[in-house]
Length: 301
Image (cartoon, rainbow, N blue to C red; front, side, top):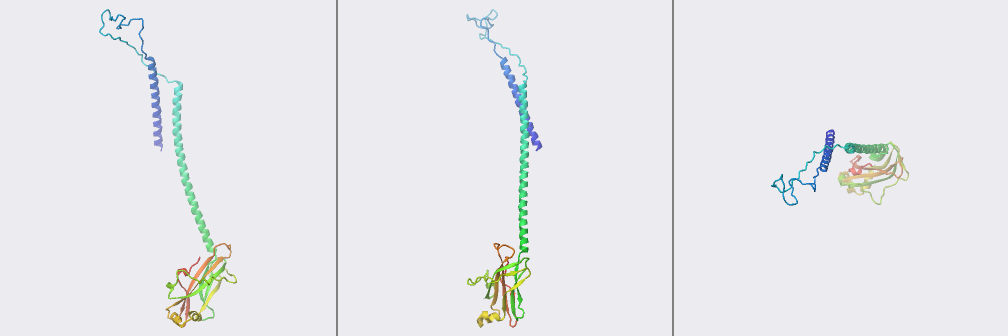
């Protein structure tokens, strides 16, 4: 950058020097022209070698070979022109303006580069601020998710009932949760691959709303559904289906969902949902109920 600036400054000085020389030469030529003027011959005097009124020539008393007049004009040598004070001041002012213009260009280029660097720094700062805000938002959301209620469903043996099971919902979160609605259904299928991708509920059987509000504090649980071996005969309705279930040719699935909300948040906030699914295993003497089913039947929001 420094060498390029010096080169531009040298070019400006050379241009100014050439213009000064041209101005001086022009002044010299104008003076010479003013001094070089032909001297007209006198009208009354006879010039040697000129033609008289009689048409005869006289060259030192004899005839002249050349009948054309000869005029000899002597031009004095040009005198050097000395710059006036006004010319010197004009040349110095032009030099100063050229230097100031060059310095101004350098300052403008430097300012533009500083502005460009500051703009890039501002862009980087804006990107960093946006990333920081996004990280803070994710951290706040993670904190909210950690502090909210989480209802999970498990299966436990029914106390005092042989081959009886309880579907229990528990609050595993850190804040109280209020159960808004529940829904359950039992279906027979050859295996879980024959179940629909998403749980289906009867349209005429909407999700039930508990008559008394169910509020679960952290660590508390409640029973959603009870099922025992004797309930299978009622569900099968025919001996043929009961036989297929006993031979594992057909399976019984119990699934449902729970809609709940954080008790500490406003009612306009979005609610959460827990879906669950169980497979009833019928043995010759003992039965079992385990969590099973496709992923769409076991979700948490």
